[in-house]
Image (tube, rainbow, N blue to C red; front, side):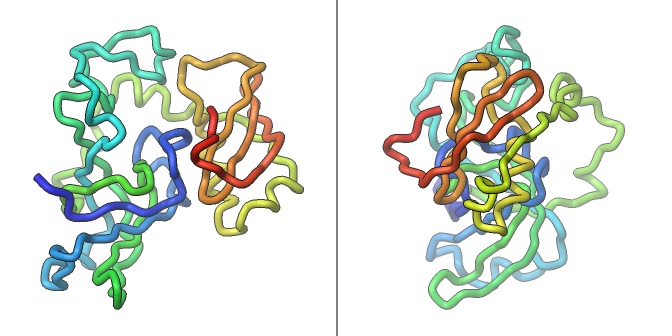
Length: 230
């Protein structure tokens, strides 16, 4: 297989990316296709769908060996589950599957057809292998059971983000950042109240601590990828 496209968004690293697609609709991204897949005929009729599936590569984990048992971060890193019972990125084949909202389709002179989407859980630059329409009558199963991810879906932190620091972010990003922070971007096994975190988002690095159920932002700086520490 070869990548047909890649995603462009505000997550230059894995830290902070939502653990599931669709959790934070305020997160915007665009999908840019490789030149050979920009034929407009390939997109005919896609505008009739509100959501699409993305099949993509865990490109930061392609060199890691798969394991039959993994430790889901949301379970604190101490409970083992079978890899096929989780969405761990360390898999026999490093493939991800995400459902995102298709906001609009645009044709640009230099890039051809570009898809603008909401709610993606991919890192900036992630290669995409395929795009398929989401079909509600067959893809939606309200009666389905969801094991531990379903039990953790309502976990939220209280976010204290001083106004003078929030103003350092572009206005269009503020609501999304607040929701990402409330979704608890830390690995599930990290609960050290003295630990300082840095979450890159766009061109900013958001520094915070967490005590109990409260996340406190104490600084916002320019993001430098080579010096970023979590």
